[in-house]
Amino acid sequence: LVNAYVEPSVFARGGSYCLPHPEKADKGGEDAYIMCTAPDGTMITAVLDGVGGWAAVGVDSGMYSRALAERIGIEFDAWVGRQTMMKSRKMPARAFMQESQRPLLTILERAFEHVDDLGIPGTCTACLSLLLPCGKLHVLNLGDSGLRVIRNSRIVFATVEQQVSFNYPRQIGTGSVDIPADGDYAIVDVQTGDLIVTGSDGVWDNVWEHEYLALIRDSRNLEYQTSLDLLAGKIADTAQMRGRDPNYLSPFASNALRAGLTNCLGGKLDDTTVVVQKVWASVASA
Image (cartoon, rainbow, N blue to C red):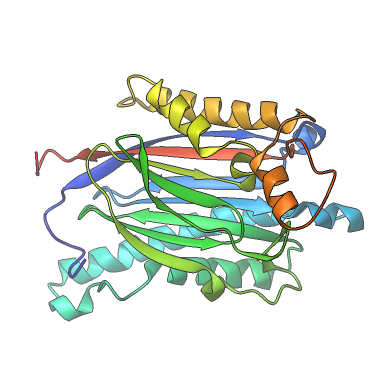
């Protein structure tokens, strides 16, 4: 990505599904997400998982995650506007976004500062992606939500969860020492046909890699948003089904055993959010 304004080559269609923890369904759970597309095909997604521990002090962290998601959308629009303005003014190439720059960090930092100024209590994890028409996927992950890029039924990129200690993810918000810049930033080359799956930890704590890859292989007609919504729903439903099973050796239970804990067999029922995108060639590059 030397110049963000090359001839467009790819875009994505996306589907989503958000399934609250049954005990939090009345308030919509604590997860939040956005999926927005600019006129040139640039697409941003964000999955934000409000930290449930705040409920012990009477705080709904879902209010924080939803406020942050809304502001990320606003900051994305502003970023797109700045890029469009520079292009329309025919500014020199050095004025455009260079590969070394991190637009997602700028977007998240500005959104975070705005929500902090509002004084909304709570904290959340954050996993953001920005797909550019040139085929570069920017990824910013802080905490234990995550993203996978899947090509021909194989994972070609995966975020790594960030934890202070077992079941204590890095998080941004009230009282946290973590800031957006503490997230892991990556730039990934994507291809036509790739699937990008972003999810809260309710997915990755309960569904093994071979299980969600099998769900993807069994899916059909992924050129349609409704099919992508269905796939996201199947992954979320599987995660909650596993989360209810007290005898299931889940990824969460396996990680707990590795951390030296005992009596951790079973899934971890949680809010579960899934965003699925499929990458396509644009008409201009077909």
